[in-house]
Image (tube, rainbow, N blue to C red; front, side, top):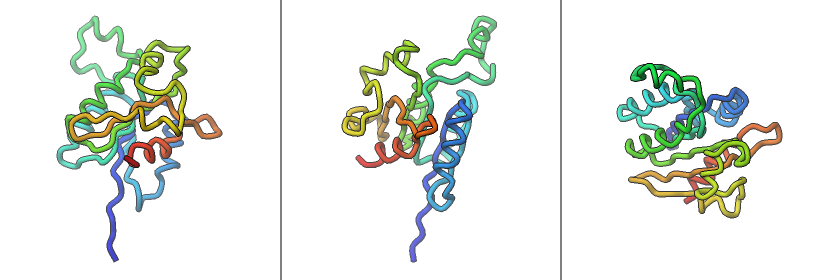
Length: 169
């Protein structure tokens, strides 16, 4: 009998509804090892340390707070509590670390925020099972998906659907 190791997932999400949903969706410890963090600074540290214990998958929100104020000047501190599109630099850092599967998943409506509208050119404006593969990009040895989130009935992100989409290719 062969045993497969669980998929090691780093999930970055600052919204409690979506965090709780991820914990429920990835609760099977035989299949998934979930590391959950909620801001850019913590996520960056996990990714930098990932060379020792690499992740198989990075799932990240698009917009999130920075977290700490390590390298911030007084001017930079003005933005510390703003939600900024840190999902992009985290995805590129993950690709630099050769994490095989990476997804940026936003729940922001493209009418409500310009950054969400910007990714309409990279991804469908709303989740579409038929065209989700058109939202996949190869960067280094990684496959990156950029998505407007699919949702469960309770309004939480359907992380499992995103995972299935990026791993099917």
